[in-house]
Length: 102
Image (tube, rainbow, N blue to C red; front, top):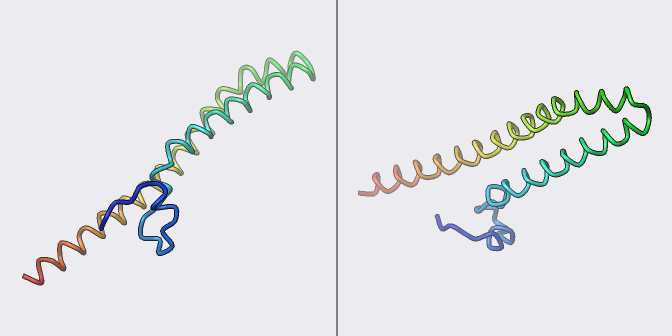
């Protein structure tokens, strides 16, 4: 199976080449940036409401942020594992078919 680049995979209408494994690090970086911005805005919003809410957001926010990032990372790793299972299974089928032809 030939390896295609990003644009080749994006316009592969037979879906034999996948785009997500090529962009997953960028997608994860976007999630990290938005989670960080969400934390900062939550702290600012909390302090606008009251100092106690702001302190609560400041103290509990990092825990929520870490749990959120762990959850997102786990889902993305599950997706990558699925793609690797596909790649390995495809290779095994190719090896088996080439050895049976000999």
